[in-house]
Length: 157
Image (cartoon, rainbow, N blue to C red; front, side):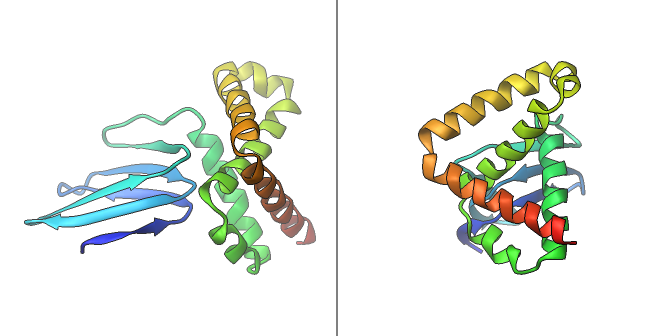
């Protein structure tokens, strides 16, 4: 300590002094941390959503379950094709977020049952898809390439 740097995608599990945990899922961002007397203070920031995934003192954010499933598929792709790992880790958070949106929006578009069962998440996802396409076109394209690489890795298995 102090610590100041970038972090990649995945689950963040915070454990407090009472051994109580809260979890988050993230596409990556910046971590600043320091010791203040006997306490560690850490600030995780991200330019894209960083979602709560439950724990002692919080509920799950909308979409956190879909993101957890996406990360499970990503880990499966990395297990099949370890050469994909540096590609995923070197991608910026916007590209990883775009890959997620492309995947999950495609799943919702293909399933009227899924859209009807969680209309609130479907509306949120469509809005984010439109925003990312408009405001982050290059990252959107990078996300498409990343998702294609993930899918190819799992097809080869």
